[in-house]
Structures are given as structure tokens and as C-alpha cells.
Length: 125
Image 1: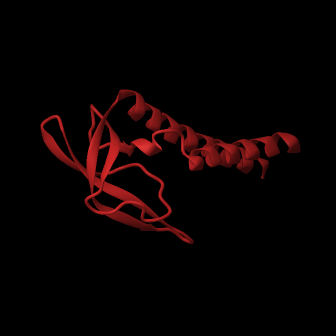
Image 2: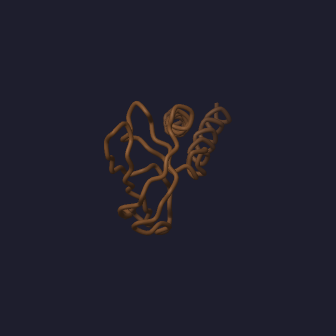
């Protein structure tokens, strides 16, 4: 049973680190640009609904339409609105809202949950 605490804890920490590293990589190596919101993607979860903006922008002589990394619990943007994004120069399909470029609250929650479960494991040893 204790092993499950460690496995779950490590999994939570890995998820949080992946999100953190992905955001930092785009933030550090990315290009800042204005993009236009073409629609909001609604994602239904068990007990909540989140929204992610799908934006259009030009980079490297090409037009891109991508879902940007964002955590929105309400429909914050409207179609036609201009937003600042950071996109990966090597892979413009990866983009993040500039306002969400720092570590997200959800990333920190995953990290602390993982740390808590590993702490519980060591307390039960």
C-alpha cells in the first residue's frame, strides 16, 4: 500500500515538472507575437468546464491556427480579440498565452500533492 503513495507522488511530481519545463522552454526560446482569437475550445471535465483559446498568427512566412496552452475556467476571450502569445520558433504549433507563461497554479498543486504523498510514505516507514 505504501508503494502506491510513492508511485502516485512521483507521478504527480513528474507531471508538474513536465508542465514547468514545457512552459519555461517556450518562454525562453519563444517569439512573442500578437495573435487573433478565432474561437474558444470548451472542454468538459467531470465537474468543471475549462476553455482554451484557439488563435491565428503568422510565423516563418506561414499562417498557423493553434490551441494555446492556457488554464481558463471561464470564457475569458472573444472571437476576434487580439492576445499576446509566445510560440516555439522551432515548432510554432506549440504556443502559450504570454499571461500564462509563468508556472501555473495547477502545476504547483500537482507538485505539492506529489510531495505530500511521498512525505506520507516516509512517515509510515
